[in-house]
Amino acid sequence: MAATGALPQTLQSISDIKIGELSKQRNLFQKQHSEILRAAGDAVDLRSKARVLLEGVTRLKGSPSDAFDKEDLDLDVSDLALQAAGVEDGSERAAHVNIRRFLRQSRRLRDQEF
Image (cartoon, helix red, strand yellow):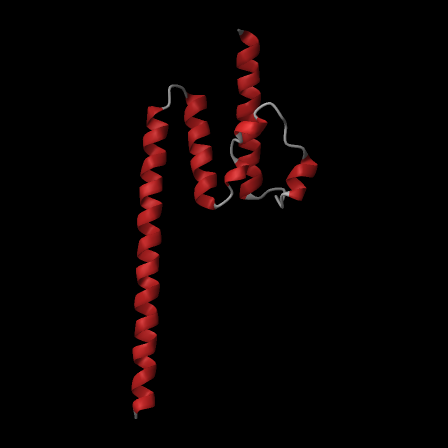
């Protein structure tokens, strides 16, 4: 009989731990989400707001290198580099990289106008 009572207790303990961990993850996500929205709200123009949102989304998704990298602002990401990074065509990560390219191009155009 002791064996039959131990299994439900073990499962309950595992479930409690898992629920606790999920709660921690949710709280962290909500905190980061609020920080991203606050930073986007403080952005001075739409381009800056889009950049903040892109950086935040890619950080939350676990691919922060898909957003802006301060070291490569003047470089273009080649298709070869995307393949090496494991970014598949049509994927959500590819969409983030394309948004990054668009923002970089718009920045170059703005800089050329002045």
